[in-house]
Length: 103
Image 1 (cartoon, rainbow, N blue to C red):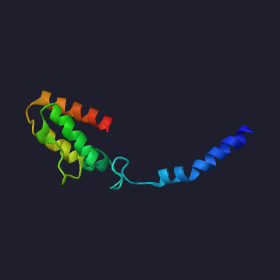
Image 2: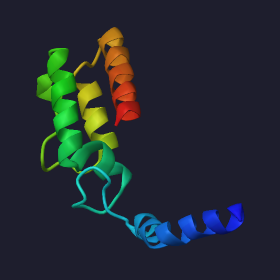
Image 3: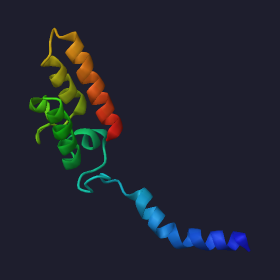
Image 4: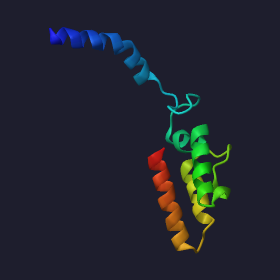
């Protein structure tokens, strides 16, 4: 009896689950194809996140721009802004790592 109830529930949700698993677009904006660069950099929600986070610590000039495509290039550009300031580079690395984890 319980088996048939669970089977009925699974069959009711199967089409929706299939569509959810098949979907390959960004889970945040549903516009672009899901990729690591889109999720962390070019998605409108990711850009807004980085802008707000960096603004809170006074680094808004490092916020992502619309034309940037690759996350590692953006991160390297940010680290290059603090050439010779090892403690600031480490702080930025920590901030970006925590930001990636949050996104």
